[in-house]
Image (cartoon, rainbow, N blue to C red; front, side):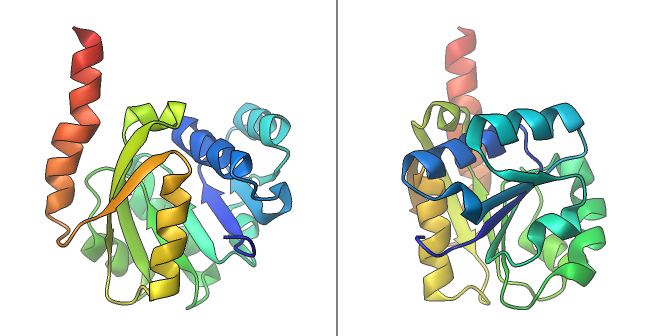
Length: 182
């Protein structure tokens, strides 16, 4: 990851946690960018982590090797269709949005290399467990980049099928929240 440039689309809690984990692992702030529609969110992430932030998603992804989609599932289609003209074929897209399939993202983005993952709430404390699934377009080097990205906030495990992410979401995502409620 030492030369990897990462752009986050969405700079909410999970994105900020990933950014913080990457910075703690030694990734230079100049290698990380983020975009968010909220000026306060941009200012907070920029101040806390020393990264450059943008209101414009296309500006944020310019020159990135990895584009992390950290937006709400209901906004994913709109965001994907908006950034599609700006994406380069080599840019890997990592989605942390629950329930949005790789097939849907391929429809909205074209044939980008896509990694779909499901981090859980303990990732906010860098103690999470994330399941990852990669499409066929993802290279071995990109798989390693995605694993290192998610390992910044805990354990990252590759899944054999995308359907296994549903089980990860139910057990790993909802399980800790249920436990904490009790």
